[in-house]
Structures are given as structure tokens and as C-alpha cells.
Length: 269
Length: 264
Image: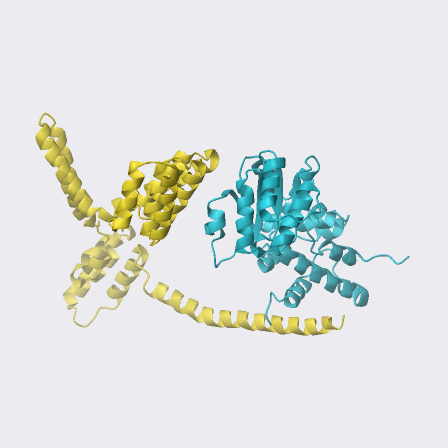
């Protein structure tokens, strides 16, 4: 059996995924997870989770779902947005009542008022910026029943202040903004990812200077970091196969770091 | 991965570029540094040692205009005076040439001007202490000092006031985030309305209303802020909605004043 290269394994660590099992417990992400868990206990109608793309909103939402749904069957996650309004109501009906029927919105509201108790159900909506205004209005009405609570995750854009958006303005009582990690947190992120696959010596090669360089390239964005690290190990993989004498196994090469940055497009040549 | 070679080629190009830019930076910076150092050394303020040197230079190479008797005096003073007294003798001899006057360190008396201003400002305070038994005079003096201080420090006072207001509002917002008290939201709405920040006033009126829709003040603030933001219809609609289920004179008055166009 052919032995798998260290760099191939390392490369696989950074395949971008939203699987809750790959959630890396950094100080900041643990803090946000705990904050979210505390917030959903409050009798709020909506909770807004926002931040720039690739900052870890989806994985945080997935992790929240994984942890809460263990003990509570009334927690539901809609990971990818259902843009058709009827299908959206149908999906909610199926998730909440385990029912395959296709009720209209009015009937669905009646059903909620009839069967659900106060503050009993939690719906986690990811990528909510893709929902139309009319869908958001329906979500608002659903939250007004006080039977269903929503955690809405969306991108923060520079063009608009999301909190000021009409349908959020009146209903949101808690907003949680995710911020990119600093260089030291990014170091922990990279090392934890590698250590999860027992790549100890490779993790040790990432010194502060190297991580600082990576942070300056990716601005701490997790998605960008994953992309960059994948490219880095892809180049390493090539050198290991074709020119192993060029590899310094004690330290990450500046040349390869810069090559990866050129490949991903951070450095314009 | 055939693209690695291409990547290496790009990397070499990138390195060349970086080296070139580094070289250019050095080439451009060094002359500036040299010129800077030159000017610094050239116009460096005269220290004690330099004044000695200057003095010895002038003494060693007297101009033709200086009379022979003068030269003798200079020579004598140079030779006779011990080293420790050299500076004193130099300063004595250099007096007529005016330059030492520039060199001699004199205490800056500019602060006295400020002191005078300060005295003027503090005088009323002293008077106020002296005139304590006369309350009427004291009041007028306090007013005078206040007005004079306000005139002088108008901007400073304004900034500190607005800053403190903002701090209070921020702490209130933080408090609201913890306790979700509708009264706090209402207070914030009022405060922002008074500050003419109608967008925030509207936002906080909505929040207060959503927490306690029975309080007519939140409706009034919502309506007033809406009118200020040019949303008259929205304001009228909201007040009409409230009046459909409630009867409130204050709300009615606001509604009529909006309809009549008195509230703009």
C-alpha cells in the first residue's frame, strides 16, 4: 500500500467544509457559540448572526444545531435557502410537524398557534440574505406568533446596514457580529487543523512569522485561509514528489508561501 | 503539475520586482537622509563647546578692522583666563558682535502673557471668595466669569458636553441590551429626538413600542420622528392605528398638528 504524503493529508485538512465536526474551538468561536446558546434561551423573536463571508457563520450555526438538537427535537436547521415561498412553508411544516402536506401560509400560522407552545421551536436559517423581502416578511410574521424563534445568519455588506433593514429593525433583539481572527488565533486554527490529523511536525513548522504572513494575505478570513493553505500544501506535494531535495523540513519555506500567494492571487505579479 | 514551473517563473519575477523596489527605496531615501543629516549638523543649536570654538576662531583670526590694542586685549584675555573661565570671557568679548546674544539662553517670558490671562480669569474667583457675605455680587461675578469662560472656551465646552451626552447614550444602549427595558428605549428615543438624530429616534421608538405598545409616548415619538424624516403618511397611519383601539388626547393632538402641518 502506497504511503500517503504528509502534505496530501495536510491539504485535505483545509478542504473548505461546513461540517460541524470540523468546528475548531478557538477562543473567539467558543465564545460566540456559548453566547448563541445563551441567547437562544431568552424569549426573543429573532437573533441576527452576521459577519463578512467566510468568517465561520455557517459552521457556527451547524455546530449550534448539532449541540442543541441532541437534547431538543424542536431545533431545526435550514442550511441552504429555499427560495420558493411555498416550498419554504412546506419545508418548515415538514420539519416542525413531520407532515408532508402543503398548507397555505394562513393555515400554517393557525396550525402553529394551535399546536406549538410559547417559545418552543427554534429555526436556524443560514444564508438569509438570499431570502426575498416577501419571505422575510413571512418569517417576521412567524416570529410574531412567539411560538417560533429564528436565528438568522447573513452576510454583512458594506452597501447596506442590515440591522437597519425594515424587517429586522423591529424584531431583532440580539445581534452577534462575527469578526475575523487575529494572527495568534489564526495560528491556533492552522495548528489545530493539522494536529487533528496528527501532523505534529508539520504544525511545528508554522512559526509566528509564517502565520503573520498568512494572516496578512488572508486577512484572517477562514475560507481564504483554507484556500491558501490548500494551495500551499499542493505546491509542497509537487516538490516532495519531483524535487524533494528543495524541501526544508524544519520550516515552512518563504518561497513556497509566496508562490502559493501568487497562485491564489494575493500577490499580483 | 506543469503550472509549478510557471509559478516559479512568476515568483522570480516578483522577487526581482521586490528587490528593485527595495533598491529604489534605498536610492531615494539615502540622499534625503544625507541632506537631512547635513542640515541638522549645519544648523544644530550652538552648544557650550561650539561657542568656545567660535570664540577661539574669532580670537585666533582677528579681522583687519580690529585695532591692535583690541587684539592685545583679546590675546591677553585668551592667554590669561583659565579654562574654566573661558566661556565667561568669550561672552564678554562677543557682546558687541550681537551673535552671543542669540546664543545666550534666556528664560522665555512668554508664559507671563498667559499668566496675565490666567490672572484675569482667576481674579473673579478671588473676588468671589472675598465677597462671600455679599450674595448678589457673587452671583453677578459668577455669571461674568462663566460668560467670559464660555466665550473663551466655547468650543471646548461644546465638545465635552456632546461627548458626555454620547457616553451617557452609549451606556444607556448597553444597559438596554442587558435589561430590554422599554423605558430605557423610550428615553433613548426622546434623547435622540432632542439631539435631532431622527433616524435613531425612530429606531428606538420602534423598539420601545415593540416591547410595550400600550405606551402612547412610543407612538408619539415614532410619529414625530417619521414626520421629521419626511414620512408624514407613515406617522398619520401609525397614530390612526393606535386611536382605533385606544383613546388618547395627546395622540389626537399630535395627529391634528401633523394633519394641519403644524409639525414639520
